[in-house]
Length: 282
Image 1 (tube, rainbow, N blue to C red):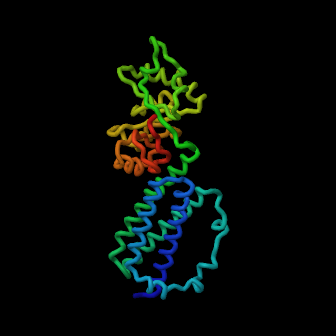
Image 2 (cartoon, rainbow, N blue to C red):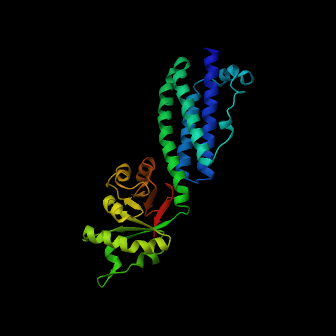
Image 3 (cartoon, helix red, strand yellow):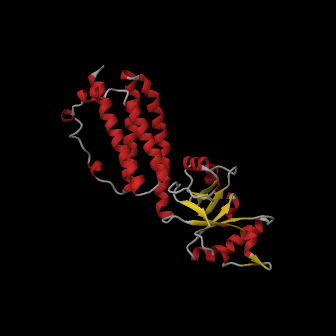
């Protein structure tokens, strides 16, 4: 076994593991998201298992940290991070570059793990997307909100739209659907109640109808199972709109997580199992 290649693998493995810990600690202690933390922990354990196929004693014998010509080369840009997002970005890059190195050079000393390292590299891109979505929405939805689903017909009393009904609801998100109502009336109703909702610091989402949400300038949509995908919804909506997903089981939660939905709506409580913020129907 080529000692220099083992030395290279040891350095790359250490670099990847360190980057993983930096990301995982932020997701766990700052974003406070259990599902993302669980996914990162599982990723780290898979990585550890794969690297365990290369003898640690061989790696330690090949390790020459003090003689590494790269340890004395540091760029000014590496000594400064503008914010937490730049820390995350730098460490995801560190993870992915290290995995690529490991994937290629493991073919020389332990070909059996190369495929697993390749899959981890692909998984890292998905996890980066998830963490970035979590980060971006931390300020957008600072508290774990409650949601209420209403049919627009419930806002009419004796044929008159009650524009302040939604603002009085004990929920942070108002999710509107419409049964036996024309699209034109639905959009008009949303536009009329929006000022009161915004004034009460609530968000208004339209159930399933991306076209009407965009037309009425709502805050976004919440998608039922079987509706368009999160990706399709984003293509139809302005960039400022959020996309929520209504979930019925943990499998739905997992899919919403992979799709990087902005939030989930559930009638059951998934303690600490949130996608950005778990939204509980009131």
